[in-house]
Structures are given as C-alpha cells and as structure tokens.
Image (tube, rainbow, N blue to C red; front, side):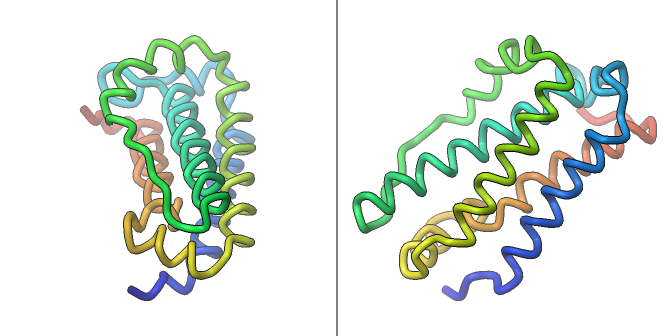
Length: 149
C-alpha cells in the first residue's frame, strides 16, 4: 500500500487549522456545544488524546523495529469525556496544538518501512488530518449554528 504522498502537508494543514481556531476563539466560545455532550474544548482535548496515542504507538513500533499496536476501545471517548471537559478551555486548545505538532514531527522523521506498516494497518495513524479534520468540521458546523449529534 502506498502512503498518501501528501500526508505531511495534510497533517501540517490540520495542525494549522487547530491553531487558527484556538487563536480566534475566546474561552467562552471554546465552551460552545458540539453535539449533545461535547464542547469545542473537549473536542480539542479528544484530538490531543488520540494524537498522543499515535505517538505512543510510533514509539513502541520504532523500539521494536516492527509495527506494535495496542487496542484502545473507542469507549474511552465516553469514559474520558468528563476528564476532557474538566480541562480549562485554553489548556485544551494548547494541548491539541502541542500534541498535533509533536505527532506531525514524529511522523515526518519516522523510518519509512515502519511508517508504511503503520499506514497499511490504519491510515489515520499516519494521516492524522483524517481524524482531526472530521472533528474540526464538526466544530466549524457548531460555530455556524448547525447542530450535530
């Protein structure tokens, strides 16, 4: 499987999208609902968590010299939501930016053969923009007054 050639560019663009959003929104706006139980801030904390999880997989993979993954049930989103919601909005935005930048750098310098294995196993692990943009689109829709669920 060929890695998305533009993954570095796509990831950087989604990181910039997070930064631009964080720079333009007030703390009150970061508390705006996104769907029924989520806010913009908790959504950004969610993005940070999954970017950090990707870094953990990359670290274990590089140390082992082969793809190493570990399951994290998606139920973690429901379990962690109250914790993410407790993070002050500006801190959630900072964590999202820092985590995105960290995983972008890690992916850009990752050994090609291991990167290919990670991509083949789960494309969004390498093209982080896929996951980020899904949620950033939801945030933008909420800011336009469109209700998600």
